[in-house]
Image (cartoon, rainbow, N blue to C red; front, side, top):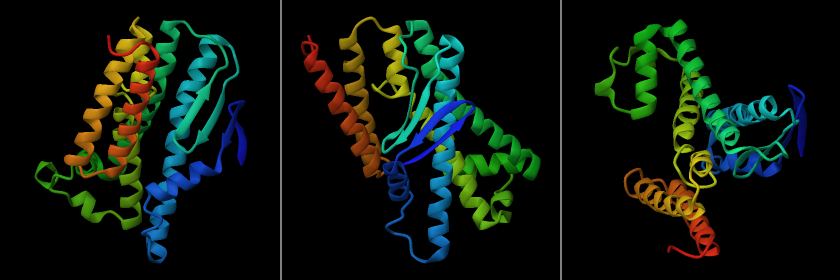
Length: 238
């Protein structure tokens, strides 16, 4: 167990968090020092990015309630818990503050790339890492070609996590942030779980059939099943 305090907020990092990061980073497939270095960089980026996300929740919660929150990083990501009841309005603010922090971090990454490679270079690097479409690159990919391989891998991880993970987390699938945000504005719990179940199934299918990602399929399939269970506990579909 790894524990520390940041901005007077206690943080606990569980061993499963590191193991999950290692597996998602391809640790079991890594061969040689260079590939293991990439896995270690991925784990550091995951740690930093999720910590920023959770501190978006925690700092906003503390500002709104005055109650000292705690942050926990575990196998499924992170959790910030203020230990107090929030109004729907404040709950929505706290929920959206997490993805907003991740997207702000992404914007700062873009700014750093502008300072290093110029506007066209930044656009090349960001577009390629988001779409992998070379024909969309405004600067013909020169910045990517000139990047150090280690820096290229580091930037790729930073962009992937803070852009894509932030957006995916906004899908209305409970208990993702998007699902919790929807729950804060929707009076019917049944509808929250119905939307979560349908969105989870569709995302799982798209992730597997279009992107070939077993991880997305399993994750959103599991979330869809959780929403189905909650729906049944609340009287079923009708």
